[in-house]
Length: 276
Image (cartoon, rainbow, N blue to C red; front, side):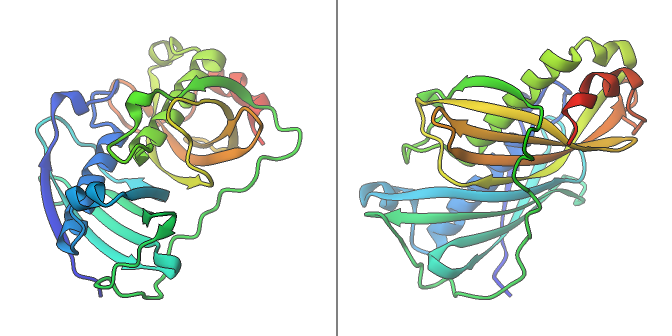
């Protein structure tokens, strides 16, 4: 069993999303901060990494959101880290709210890279453990998608001169809004007293998107149920190369009381042609 590291951080007003809850990217930022503290414990503080041209490279992620959090919530991040083959780090993290209930679970991979090679941190033993099995499949042939152009600003990159995970999450979040604005119409939210909660998802990174580059976001619906649907997105470069994919679960809830509800018929009518 890997050692458990704990760190507590507090949410702020700027962490709230348009639903007045702590945004999903805040959980990833808190989890990333905790990972950096663990790396310090193993002899890799960020100052050493930057001075020795060592980069932290984020990888694929599975995340689940279990309870809503609000401003001024003290969130405790519990972190365990394992070393997989080729020096890849597997992070298992649970974020607890002030009430000590689970708020979020994140399993993600990352690498420390120096001169093009993965660093093997000796104090983190290589171990075979059960890892999350991703369910993302390739886009079906002739699938109807909504396509949007997106510019990745240089201001989204971090001190390692690459995109942190939360910046990649931001691209997918933007694609989600663009899809619903174009196909569903955001005014439908108030008209039907319905919104959707992001319950969790999978992100596969095949090649790091570059800051300052132009990409395309392709969006569609994998499947649709009575009170939820699974949203799919691909990020591709201008040559058509697949950079990253996401599958997220969206739960329909009443805007007025935040309780689960059936999808409005008007919503289904608008998105039906984009369902696999």
